[in-house]
Image (cartoon, rainbow, N blue to C red; front, side):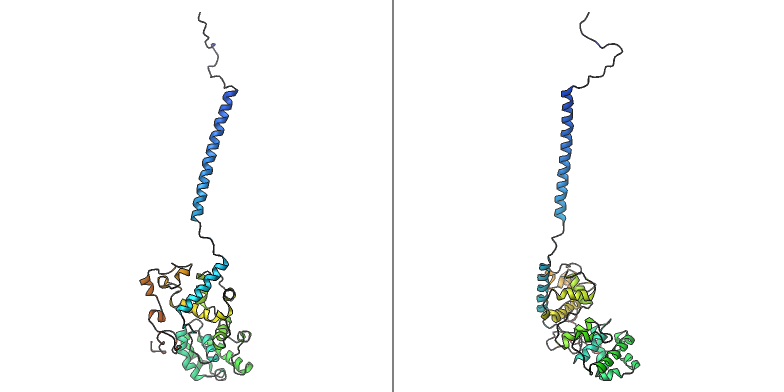
Length: 313
């Protein structure tokens, strides 16, 4: 008989279970696999983080850097528009006050075309306070909202006559008490008729300072406060003129002429408008585009053409 062993009939032929050494090897293999998987996952995470970092936007501008950029923009605008001025025709504080009230919801050009007849009929606050409303409405009709504006002009003229001796006051707190006069109008009058620095936040000014990231405020009073903190008081009035000039001539609301803008390198919103230089030049307005300005009687140093009188366009 052979001495070799054979399976016992009726018994299972399954392989023997591993011993202690085999079990340890299996555990080590599983641990190695888990470590490799974790390492690969970690590598992918690191690579993803590196890629995300590479795609991040540039570091946010500090407040100090923004102030420096804002002041440089002001210096550049001073060179571009050395002739910047209020674009309303006026000969005295009363005429400027009235013209500014009329300028709401219309152009300075339309106001300038309307005020010669208005001031010929009512040259003083006393004359205007005594006006027949219907007759004044007919004169200022081209400026729009003529009934509401007539009411404001009659009210402020009566207040000037009765409370200020027929003179326009030179203090903001007095001006804003007059009918139809808010901070914007008061600052226009103070800065240009009395030499008192003020920031005029109209639609152009607000639009540009937000495009330039000086502030994201929408409320004009808050915009005024923020910008006043960026510039010395001595710059406020001329800064207002320069910004408004730029907004009317180059940095338009709907289609800015980015490709023809001299301060494009300083503008964080470059590209919102037309960037092709030739196409952008065709968007320029007033003297920048070779067209008449808004004043019928512009300052002597104004390089553009005077605006046409009413009916002569």
